[in-house]
Length: 350
Ligand code: NAD
Ligand code: DAU
Image (tube, rainbow, N blue to C red; front, top):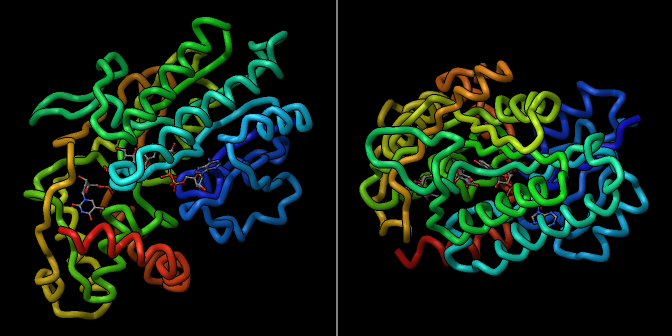
């Protein structure tokens, strides 16, 4: 049985990937290594927690000795690395958490994999999951390709850029079988409600203001999370060593249009007269260093490995809203305690 280490598997994207691998590949044993920060939630994996080919390991990738020991003990065949601090706003308030986890944590995993696999790198894949934010910001036209120079603007994106460089350097220098993908904004079930879409769903539900940063004209390219997990599956199995693949939804929206679309669907689902929740829209101070536009050219992934998004935005959006409405206990659990303190700090100062 192949032993696959997935880091950050209790988070939003990680939990969808763990589920996909556990169900689709009974011949793989999936190890989910997660620190369970505020963003990590084992409730996300309730349906597969007792699967015979799944093991959860609680641990911190910043802890060098722990990571080395784990690799020695478990002899993993491959790594898919998602664990990260992932929220841009938090990186503005506490950059060091991002620098430790995203940079040092990635370096620890690379070093442990290097010592475990140094005699046969070709047989072992190290796959690093990254973001389109490393490319910086686009103007009104153009797309990020795999050749776009890096130009990160937030501590989050700078820490991800740094980890990407390390992964590439370990391939170029030591010959490790490394691959990277850079994906656009994900949405879907289980996303922590600090991010735009679940935050708005939660606030519409509770008739709270919907904070729109700046003009609301910033643009993001949205991809349904299960499509991202499927792209990771394809790249993990078919991607070429040393290559980078961009993943995107081909689905650009201004933030204000996304918020209005959410209001339309939520008002309908909640049985409120259409437009009721429009009055919740509240323009607030812009995010510092706010990137104007992200848009991915994912043609390399389509042409070379045959992946394309399968879920249309209207369908994915509706599925997402319904998931949150049907899982209000999940929302309540993650928005109590520390979340409320974060929310007050983040949104009362605007
Ligand atoms: P998330 O914040 O929902 O989950 C991150 C997970 O990592 C959590 O389970 C957390 O407990 C774990 N973690 C954090 N620090 C850790 C540490 N020191 N040791 C072990 N585990 C730790 O993030 P997400 O949105 O699912 O993103 C997953 C990955 O995908 C990240 O690397 C992110 O940069 C990347 N990504 C995210 C998006 C997006 O739209 N969410 C888009 C492109 C790329
Ligand atoms: O592009 C990929 C990235 O997408 C990932 O690497 C990150 O991990 C992920 O968090 C996401 O980053 P963004 O900053 O784009 O996502 P967020 O949901 O925080 O914000 C989306 C847009 O909405 C952005 O332009 C900021 C704006 N926004 C966000 C929040 C939380 C608001 O206007 N109001 C808000 O309250």
